[in-house]
Image 1 (cartoon, rainbow, N blue to C red):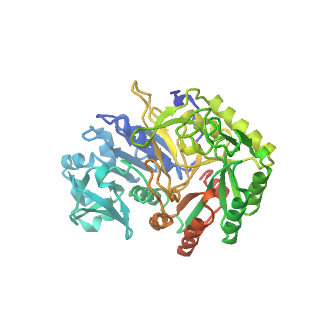
Image 2: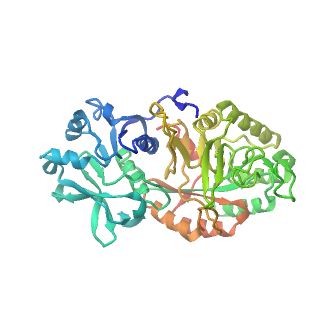
Length: 505
């Protein structure tokens, strides 16, 4: 894969700066860089970042930053004495995650006296929930691993921010704060998803970087996979309903329908929005009713390939390769063979010509089909669009020199808008979508389940509840989501306004 580090890093624009320190040792040392990127992304709502291996820490680094985050993801990695000394005397916030604090406390006789708590041995029990502000967030105890057994020795010095419950009913502190030090007793990045304790961690960052965050609860809805083959009457019905509720919305549009393997005999092999005037007119109508059109790839498929399904638009990945394995799981295979910035820009620019020919406004927001892309594709999109609206993929070798081993990647969802390590604003999509049927590894997801996600999202300070809905499912499920969310206190907002607000802080 091409080296993203050769691409120019965007200029700084945030008022604050975060130092992210990560591990590099052990069998899973390469994951430390991924966790650092995740942290830099979350902090990117408010701050620019410096991210380095903790082994490279230099004295005074804590004092030079508005927040220092140490991600202890590798057990037993030796920490620089300068870092430990600076933590002991910090007057700027320090957020310590996972491993390392136990060893530091054991070697520092004054730790419990100074901070009022002791991080103990790691408890390998099953912890399935994290309680935060009266709401239980989910924790996959079968995947997340152990939790440090924190003991509060001086309650007057320590604020217990969140707790976790073991399967036998025992409760332990999950996150505590004493003075400048905040400690989270596990790595919240082991996995991420709607309803997860990862959201608690994200909210802790809000408290550290924006302690005066307004008490507001904003929501967004995106109408998904609209192409030239969409039903224009259904699109107008959706627009009318959302307008009747005062709901701004977005519409994810691919401009050219292709079916090179002729999976669907009822449709032509190729159809553009310029050749589908009724659909183009319906999209303009959606704009008039409060909709924002966003570019959802060019064809939402790749060449004459099953990638991984039919080769037909809206079924397949466009900027990434994938297949379905023997267990019916979709597996990522990596960037396309011809991947480059020039190739990605060629597809984007070809699509924008179709938008123009169809008389549609030029989009300023992009969404990768199935959220699959390479670093070079992200760079291409950043040169054409103000923002992305999606969950995104991040790769080792982006922050640090690439190793000889194959690059590791992972995706990240955001519960609020950020400016990510690719230098672009990313709008949140943290609730997923309503899905009446299971497919591959994805289970049924009902509006009721999504409302449970929104209930947890509501705990977050200045957080978002953002979801997407496929146009062909009609208005019914939207009613089951929009109206209860409005009744709860969510305010639906226009994505363009969120982009403008997030442009620079």
